[in-house]
Length: 448
Image (cartoon, rainbow, N blue to C red):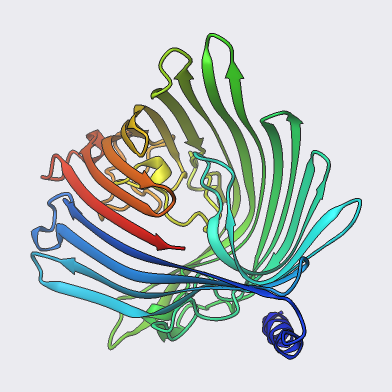
């Protein structure tokens, strides 16, 4: 597959270039400038005063190119010149990366009569339809087929990362290398504005396993090999009810199962680490959630939002069966569950409520409150932003308040100002920092 995608794209570009002189093809381009700046004060919850304040600065110019050869065939490319830096203020540590990111590149072919279909091959962004259930939001190197027939939509794809994502990288990230994925999705519009979606993701890790005593560059060590399957169902509805207003409703349920091998390594010496331990386990987890937004008929500038998500935990650590849920690894940023804490939905219960006020045509304010609790007592949390482990003596992880000011003007200008405060719960009682503050600024300007 690694050769198939590259050869197919090159062949299509070659064929189009030879026929474009006689064809009435059209070329489209967009450019986008983006700046992101954020500060997280309390990264280590005060446990390490030299590693407690993180400053991130990202700048990029994204260009979107598309050549429509005819009504059926088009070629696309999205790239970004980016420059990113991350500074730990107290320790005066700085890491930076810059280069060209390859976000989307490939060929799309639209065909069909009774059943409309689109075939794509290349690097394509695959997004979830949900505002809350952030299971998919990433670029995948894939071969896909999408079908539409009346109220039904189907999607099938085989995916495996073919090349690095940026010129700044020397190799494919270990957790993505040699991972093959099969994606299936079926959506049915039951009634106007009401969609029932079934999805299936099978992941097979073909990377070479480690054995105790093996040595490897620390940056290239994949800490987990996992063959997993996700199966889920979602109901997403946009309802308009007389005298009540507009209701946005989402209901979700997902199961994950499979087998995993975990690797532990010694501290690296001159960048080389030795595998010290391996552990195998079965995975059997589940997660569920809902999202409800009510915009009243009498005052449609204000919306009330409530939502909840629960990912199962593992109550028995001695039976070699891990019943903790996990996300797909394709969810990208997880701000859905909090701008600051950003946890993965594993052994976790998240309750959210808030208000959204659109006080002008292009301006709105969101005020959101999140409450985080573990399903099962544990000394670990999967992929949260702060660098501190819970004590395992309390399920109360903490609460977060997000205030977001959004300015969006005619799909050209986007400005986001974010302030978030996280108050650690009893699970972090041993740490000296009692609050964490986050300030973020995002600016995007699009040229059409």
